[in-house]
Amino acid sequence: MTDPATLDVTLVDGYVDEPAHFGVPPYISTYPRFTAGALVDAGVPEENVTYHTIDELRDERNKWRDVAQADLMIYLGGMTVPGKYVGGTPAEPDEVRELAWVAEGTSLMGGPVKFGVGEENAGGQATERKDLDFEFVAKGDVEAAAHDLVSNGLEGFGNRMRDVEEVTRWARDGAFVVEQHPNHPDYLICELETSRGCAYRCSFCTEPLYGNPDFRRPESVVSEVDALADRGVKHFRLGRQADLLAYGGDGEAPNPDALRDLYGGIRDVAPDLETLHLDNINPITIVRWPEKSREGLRIIAEHNTPGDTAAFGLESADPVVQEQNDLNVTADECFRAVEIVNEEAGWRPEDGGNANRLPKLLPGINLLHGLHGEREKTFELNKEFLHRVYDADLMLRRVNIRQVMAFDGTEMSSTGAQIADDHKKLFKEYKTEVREEIDNPMLQRVAPAGTLLPDVHLEYHQDGKTFGRQLGTYPLLVAVPGERDLGSVTDIAVTDHGYRSVSGVPAPLDLNAASMDELAALPGLGDQRAGTLVVNRPYESPAEASDALGVELPGFATARAPEGAD
Image (cartoon, rainbow, N blue to C red; front, top):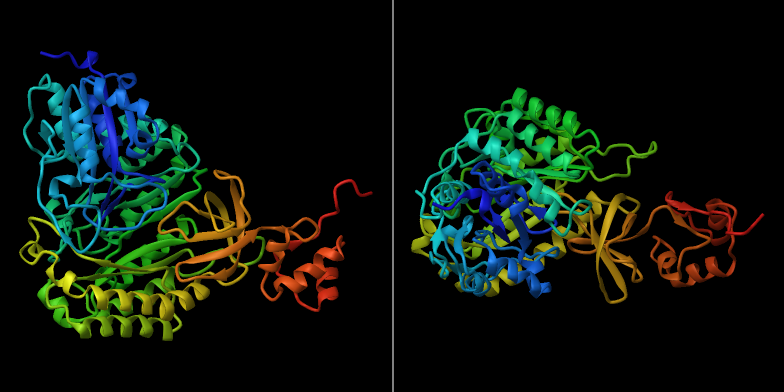
């Protein structure tokens, strides 16, 4: 019998993207944290647990020795929702196989990968279940499998789901593993689980495979946040649930008291947190219980940080598609839910007396294509819904358009990717139209010129610009003139808009020190006026510069005395 205290364990994070769970950097999912806690609970010392991301292994081949030499190597990953990622690249199936081949000890694979694997991580494809050459595959919870495998001397385990008492212990005990993430501590956001499972049964979704909603108590989640905050984490997202508004209730109706205990408790144990966002809210909850929902939305907006997004799973505005796929909300109901969120949580917090921040909480719309019953009219009805929202002067934080991935155990498994394949050309044209007709003007409404985006983390260079994002739910991609130091953090003021990104300049912007490109990016200036500003520097105040140009400069402009001046 192998003694757990002697085991060396390596966790490899291949990243996850599920309908109600995200773990691509700068996010870290619950899987590595809960699994690390389960190992410790089974007797493995913390110092014997090594954690690597798949990107680390790509970039530093010497770290593969931790995979090879571990007594137990655990792979955590799986994509059941297709996406495009900036902060990391999810593991492809061939890379996961290589992990199993390299591992000389016992190998265990788990996470949403258990639902199926495609040829690549992309939408519009069918999947199948594969073991990818691992010795063990957790068909239940991988953290429970890891705990039981270690407890049984690496000889096997039963496929079971962990209970709420276990996850309360494991979430707290596994917090230490975040310190091994390459992004720790400044550019890391922890995904928090409040529940798993869903009360509804949409045809394509893997979340109902977890069963009906099973809630963690507020004190369980708060205890986890307390442990993570002790490890230096300041960014959190309540993203691991199908419907946060239904938290602590019967799985469908809102429970404002539970939300108050949850959010208030998080703020108590992490008073210095910098990000507190959420992900999924079911619009049908808002429509069926509007008053309780309004109260819950007010509680969220009171405690969260600006720029938060409630993802709404409309999926399709076509009643034919809705009926054939058991979708639970109509276009009219979703529109009403959008109105209510705008009314209760779409306000902008004041910063220095000016309400120039992103709104506290806005809805986002998920649209999914390739579902049963999809037809050419489906695309038109979706566009009509989005135009209706825009024409009503409402705000959406983002519109997410995807093609279905079909998994065993869901109703879409019989159809697979055939409908998505048949409509690929139509899908591409429609997606472009939405970006041009909705996304760009909506972004100008949500983040008008002058909007302040604090703490933008600069990530990469392209075409003479530096691109970065804030930490949070669906953060805006921001382009800044010039090639700045990557990894640095700066406050940005918005100056212009793309389809799903914005341009900006550092804020406050010193007119006496700013580059030509930065000055030219200011609304109403351009190259000629920027050149005039540079030639006539220095200025004693922005007002002096405005008078000289005959153009009003934005409020985030300053004019500091040049260094060395009297």
